[in-house]
Image (cartoon, rainbow, N blue to C red; front, side, top):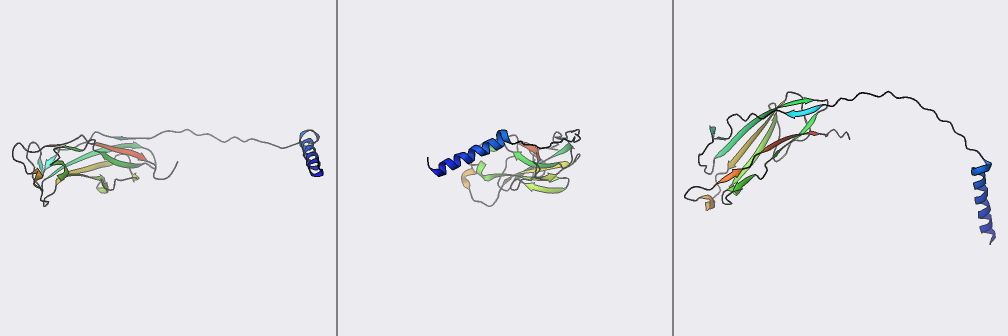
Amino acid sequence: MNKTTKGSLAAGAAAVLLLGGAGSLAFWTDTADIAGTNITSGFMNLTDPDCGEGWLLQGTAYTTQRLVPGDTLTQTCTFVLEAEGDNLLADFDVEQGTGLTGDPRLTPELDLSTRYLVGATEVGTDLAPPTGVAVVDGDTITIDMEIDWAYGVENNTSNVQGPGLTAALADIVFTATQSNATGND
């Protein structure tokens, strides 16, 4: 063995002896009690919707009237928020399920849009869904929905004689989801 290797082995053995048997390791430790707390959860609930007269065509109850370009179907639904909790924020969304289905000559011409309000204040639309909206118990949440058949686009594929083309709008689900927009993880 060369001198460097022998010296390294001797230094390593000395270190092991000092730490293991020849030396001692001492330290102090202490503890302190920290008081706990009781935790109570809040909740967020929507009442059943009040959709007034249902779908309206130009302000009149829609039943079996035949639509033409330029017509607009509207529906306004309100919910009351029942909630308990501080710093409560919500995201809103309308899930259209399968959306508008039916005759492909008609459905592309129909446009469904949504507007969201808390009280009288608009907080978003389907193009910019609201997130992180401050809400409290008793808030009235309104969604205004509109199916618009735009006028002014020449498209004769939907201009069909006979019983008329049909489309159906699937049930719509409105969701208010508790948000963590404050960044508390």
